[in-house]
Image (cartoon, rainbow, N blue to C red; front, side):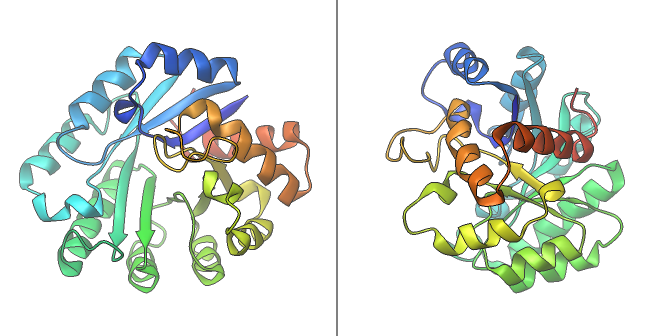
Length: 254
């Protein structure tokens, strides 16, 4: 049985019951649907409560949306971060590839949400793209107060090593199955099994053999197969390890 630690069920075009049925048939027992800003926060809260026991949620403002951050975002997050079904703060972080928000604004909003995670004792799911140095700098500022994972990891070995050194776990998506992902596959080999997670980031980044289609939680099994081969473990051992890792990091999962 698998846990998809980062998906966006509210963004999928198929109806949610069909998505859940396909996921359960594929052996996906839990899914964490991710908040990215005020427009989807209410739906994440609703889905996490309504789609028990399979779906949990997180709340966060994505770096793309950092320019739109207001105090009301913090108020809403504070109202719901103690909900039983809201298991973390995310996705948050820095994205200098697209730079939809100014870098200084992204860093400010990232720090605000790291502080919320520290206050509420919740893990974070961090998005980082072309911003490794600044991401690590902010992670260091919260050493010992915030833990979490680097989601959909596609960064350098340096970033992986830094994340692990500062207590963060690493989550692997379908990108690891792509033909041009040799560097990522090398990084995956170096990640300790007890610090590893799997995700889909659906509806994005569908793994081979579904590349080019809309991704969904059921496709996690294809990523798992590649990761198991890279880690030279059985599928059952990988499932057991990643389940334990998810339950250890996200205390509210049950």
